[in-house]
Structure formats: C-alpha cells, structure tokens
Length: 234
Image 1 (cartoon, rainbow, N blue to C red):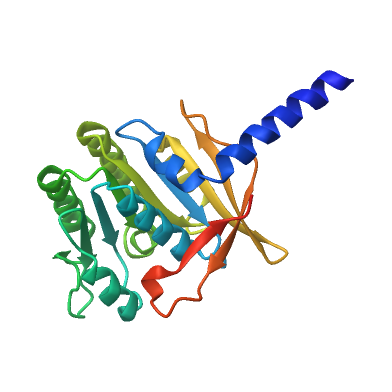
Image 2: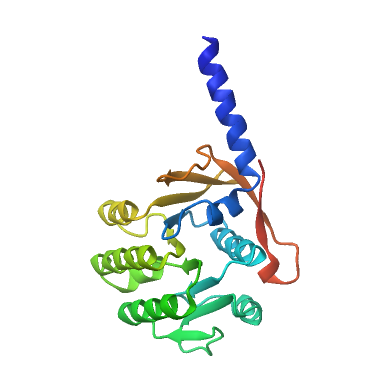
C-alpha cells in the first residue's frame, strides 16, 4: 500500500520542480521542429499566456516571430511593435488598419501560408507564436485550415522552428479539433475553474514535461499592456 503513495509523491515533487520554470521549459526542452496547439477557454487569459511565451523567449535570446491573424488591441500592438528588433518580428494580417508589424499580408489563408513560409526561410525564427487559428476556422473552410496547419507542421519540421498555435476550445466540431490535435506533437490546455486558471499539458510526445495541472495567475498591474503576464503558482 505504501509503494504507490511513494511513486505518486515523487511524481508530484518532480512536477513541482518543473512547474516553477515551465514557460522556459516549453521553449527550450522540445527538439527543433516541435509544434504545440494551445487550446484555450475564452476566460483563461490566453492572451497573457501567449505574451508570456514571447517575453520569455526574448529574455533568453531566442529569435521569435509573432503571427497575428485578427484585429486586436491597438495599444498592445503599438507597444509590441516598438519591441521589434533583429530577434523579434511581427507578421500582422491587415484588416484595413495601419499595419504595425514589420511584415503584413491580407487576411487570406493562402497569403498567410506563403508569407509565413517566406519568413521562416528568411528570418530563421527559433520560436513562432501564432495567434491564432480561431479566426481562420471562422473565415475559411475547416478542412482548408487543417491542411494549412498540416503544412505548417511540415515546414516547422523542415526549418527546425518550435511553434505555438492558439485555438479556442469548441471553435470547430470534434472531428476537426481531433484532426488538428493529431497533427501537433504537443497540446497545452488553458482552462478556468472556480475563478482559478490552469495550464495542463495534455500531450508532449518525447518531451518530459509535468502532467499535473499548473495554476497560473494573471498579472496586469503594469501601465504597459506588453508587460502584463502570467505567474505560475506552483
């Protein structure tokens, strides 16, 4: 009766050790060409989670490309655009507003695909943060979005970039979601329960990452939105 308890406690201790540095581990531990789907509940502060990935990647000196596929808070985009450098580029789809990213394209699936391929080739990003697949699933045929994601995974493998694709839970039917999940090497879930927010690593093929849910806390005290982030409460 004692032995199972000991194993469980050891696993829990290991997960606690990983939890404190989980953002960095998500960026560093997977091999080149690894793709995560980030499945997020609407009230999970997913935007702050993705922003935290970007800030941590830049902090540790990783060449990072952010892809923005929907109109978003212009103050945040202005702040992020001012951070662009040799190590940080933004590809922004244009919805009629002035483009703030160094790179822009029309909000068409084919154009996004072509531009993303070109930037992977020219910039050689180590990290790609894609925000997100949800607008594409709304505007285009789901099967075309699945094909787009399949080609993105193939390009990631070819170029060696580690990529994170945001998608909202229940955006598409179960068949489409499962097709997308099957193409990704890793699946992250951002959920909310009783007012608390949790990161759960549902899948991490060939990478040792914690399996227990990790609570995170949104930090929104800074006057600059680009400095907002999540803290892991582990």
